[in-house]
Figure 1 (cartoon, rainbow, N blue to C red):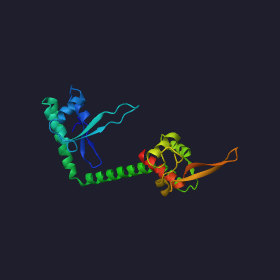
Figure 2 (figure 1 turned 30 degrees about the vertical axis):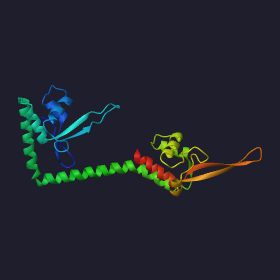
Figure 3 (figure 1 turned 90 degrees about the horizontal axis):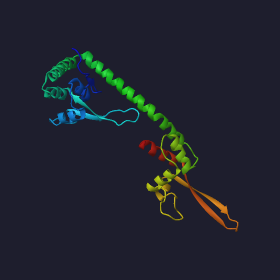
Figure 4 (figure 1 turned 120 degrees about the horizontal axis):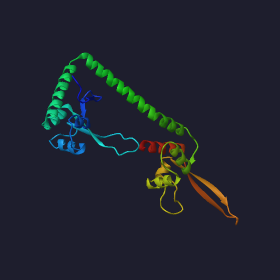
Length: 239
């Protein structure tokens, strides 16, 4: 059987047809976006007959909306064209359906599908582990730290690990999310009661001797090792 249009299989071995490739195979002159919208209006349902997704782009271009169709929908769409090309493509899909029905009863084919699915799962697992490993090692290293750091120092650590922030923005985020006091006054930028109960912060007090003999105490919030792990996990999970 000569391949007129590529037939794809997902991880569940379900057969799908790319709508844009179908549009090209049918030699449709109408713009793809207008054509596929008109085809869908014939009563097809997303999630049953077709699935839409955004295409991957290169060089920061704008992604386009693509569609994967079931063989049944692709066959009906071909028939809707009411021309010889549509009939040819429809007959091709009928042959494809027959071929896959026969394969469905072939034990060796089912075994091959099972092996392919297992391989895909292993590849996905390895990819997830590879992506998470640096973050996990980083979080574990922080967890064992007994040194408290300034907010600005934590911002630098986050920046080095792909979180786009700085000291000023991090202070603002901590205030907006209830970790530091936002009310202007002597306690401004000090840890809230919630932060202290969670042991995320400690307060460093520094005595400053004035020339007139008086002594003032400067208070600086510092993030504990536990707090560093807490905020790093929060930002990395959101990334």
